[in-house]
Image 1 (tube, rainbow, N blue to C red):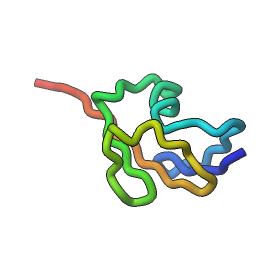
Image 2: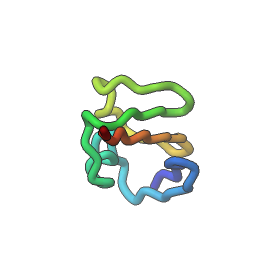
Image 3: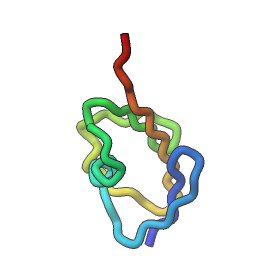
Length: 66
């Protein structure tokens, strides 16, 4: 089990998951988000990276408007 932090909220994960799986879990579109992992912007090519205990994630979801 990993204890991580997502947008300031502590979360316990039962299974090890990737960042891409986390994005899907929250029903976000990969194209419409930016992910910061432990203080660094993560390129979309690295979204298959597995989350580890004590990782800190910030997710920004882009919303179109006019």
